[in-house]
Amino acid sequence: MTLLKVDNLGKSFGGVKAVDGISFELKAGELLALIGPNGAGKSTTFNMVNGQLKADQGSIVFDGHELVGQKPREIWRKGVGRTFQIAETFASLTVAENVQMAMLSHDGKLFSMWRRAADHKRDEALALLDQVGMKAQADRPCSELAYGDVKRVELAIAMANAPKLLLMDEPTAGMAPKERNSLMALTKELVVQRGLAVLFTEHSMDVVFAYADRMIVLARGRLIAQGKPLEIRDHPKVQEVYFGSGKTFEKIAEKAAEVNAAVGAATA
Ligand code: ADP
Ligand code: MG
Image (cartoon, rainbow, N blue to C red):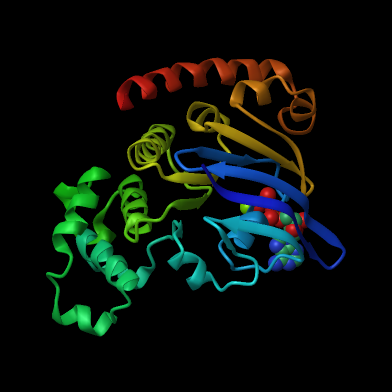
């Protein structure tokens, strides 16, 4: 089932067409990577979907609703989640408290109320933390966590309102390769187990090729290719614009196929 349908979407800043009439679709249970060189228009696309930027042209239909013109909070309430960095003010709260707070926020409760009811939603928060492998650390302050673990908690927070679509703009930035793979494996698990749809951008090509079900490639605001990783690998325009030499690219794709097979076996 098509969950998100983007049609002829565009946004300019001054004379620059940051996103120039792109169209793509995303299904439930699909992990879609948005790739392209710096300045290609990836973040602008994201921010139009989550409502932080208003599109100049085109439409974004999510689960039967037009999103263009809606406020970020309305879009979030309809089931479009995104990962946020845990703000410093919340770093002193425990792992579980951060997730509980996100759950309350979805219920429309006030933070002040939550302060008096610290047990609220604790079981649900722990279940979610269990899924991201953070249950054992539930009562530690976020400020004490390793970077890769913070990213897992951020994922749990983004999942707290049970979104149908999750947007992740460079989720593995700043992570070591091993942590990157483990965060993406976890994301893939959520996609498979919950039928979640994920749209993500990523610089690391081995991550993209290992975990994406499908990819769309942007260059200077235009969509130059879309398809499965192997189709993208063989796309001459993509190699030219994005990857430079095809030789490096072959190697990446081979390695990614290995990882993918391992993940497939783990989630089957
Ligand atoms: P990416 O995320 O792929 O690196 P962006 O979507 O951030 O690309 O940027 C696409 C283009 O739009 C770039 O040329 C960038 O300089 C420009 N741009 C993005 N945001 C703004 C803004 N708020 N004001 C002016 N120009 C912007
Ligand atoms: Mg960006």
